[in-house]
Length: 174
Image 1 (spheres, rainbow, N blue to C red):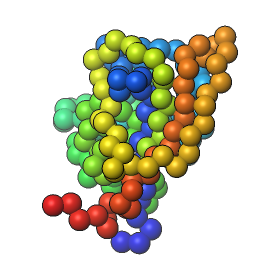
Image 2 (image 1 turned 90 degrees about the vertical axis):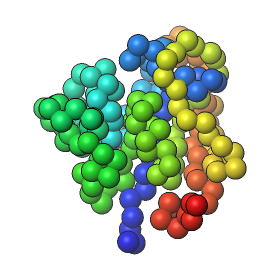
Image 3 (image 1 turned 180 degrees about the horizontal axis):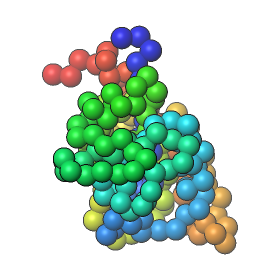
Image 4 (image 1 turned 180 degrees about the vertical axis):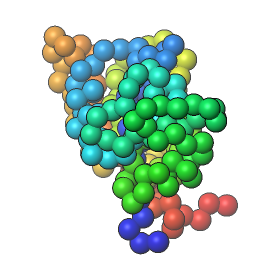
């Protein structure tokens, strides 16, 4: 189909690919939250149940799609689905952002076309990780250093990657 969705992932991670601990972010970085809001606003966001519960409510200005194995789960103001295919279908023609957590990133990673990564140049303890970004499969197309100030004390860089072999519908995975 032409006009196919571009599937993007957006994530903040440390140098060891840690993205969370005890269902929370292990750092405070307001610049990343502002980047997340600006980048995802107006787009469908796809998240797992645990990520939804950690946020506690639907994100405003975005269609919120929650993926869960729990057939009885309900979330007011969200569309609840049970598979990756259902989630992409719920996004319609819009290009969705996958926003976590680790199980959802792993599920959608083979389908992703673009990654928006806030790379935090420190190490944190964590129990949730982002998949490895293979330089043979992904190319950095934009890199911007983040500003360190009294509110954003962790050195960080905003990096956008695109899959090297093009859109997933033209790939020939064996």
